[in-house]
Structures are given as C-alpha cells and as structure tokens.
Length: 222
Image (cartoon, rainbow, N blue to C red; front, side):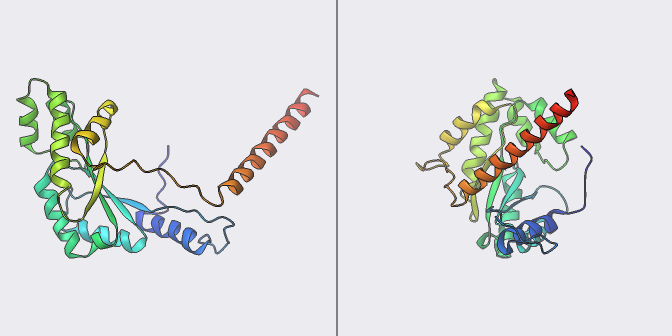
C-alpha cells in the first residue's frame, strides 16, 4: 500500500480525541455517534536519541494518548533508565505504559533481527545466552518470562504486551508462567448503549448495498 503522511502520530491522536470528546470532525461537522475509544501510542526507549524518547512520549500524552506500548524490550537496564525519566516527567501518572516483550526462536533469529529490523536493540548477552542453550527456542521463551519478571517490578509499568511472531503457541504459557495476571480474569469488552443502534445502521447500509447490486445485475442482464 502507498504510505500516506498527511497526519503524524500526534495529529492523528488529537484528531481522534476531538472526534471522541467533542463529537465532531476537524471540519466541524458533528458526529451522530462519536467513537468510544481508549487512545494508545507506541514508544521506543531503545532507539536514539534516547534522551528525547521520554519527551516525545509527553507530546503524545498531550495529544491524547492514554496508554503506550513499547518496542521489544531485551535490555532491562536501558528500559529502567527510560522509565526513571518518564516518572520524573510525570508521564506514568497520566497514561498506562505497557512493556513490549516476546520470545526469540534462536540466536540466529536474534542476530537477523538486530541487523535487519530498525529500532530493535538486542544485547550481546542475550545472543550468547541463546547460543549456549541446548534448546534455543525453549530458552527464548524462558528469556521472555525472565524479562517480564524484571520489568513488572519497575514502578510505572502498567502491564506487558506479548508479541510472539510465529510463536503464538507460547503466549498462554508465557502469561501463565510469568504470573502477570495474578489470578485476574482476562478483560472482556462491556456492552455499549449504542451497540444496537450501530448494528441497525450497519444492517441498513448492507441492505442498501445488496439492493443496488441487484438492480445493477438486472440492468446488465437486459
């Protein structure tokens, strides 16, 4: 798809916030059913300029971000430094911050990611740990659990975001063995008051589209 850069992350957040809170588009036209969304953003503590990352997060908070998800964390000391600065700026009192984590399939995979995926920092110690394991995939899962157990104790961390690309079968084990739920049930969406209205409108739109298609088919046949 062709990339479109009409809006950056801050202006996009602000646009959606205005639609939700003020019930209107940027043009001023009113929305019949404003979106009910919890606004989030991304943040990468592991990419330079490191000192600017907490400041950049503050700009996103000002634009409307209520939660943030980080890039993969494989360097806990670096993440702790970022979190200290985020706390000093008061960010963790204004949004929920989720630390991105995930299992590495092998040392070879880790090396490839480090060399080819911008913004992901993997220390040499992580690669050496995987290289020294008899079962590297299993060790990658355990590494993810160990990182979770460290970052969940950092003040200001509200949760984790497990990204298990092509290792989805490990997600349940990682969540269970790390104990992050602490006995809580997974979140389920509450029913909105206007859900029925939205469903009726969608049904009406789909019905109109089907009717128009049928008319076109009849015209074509004749």
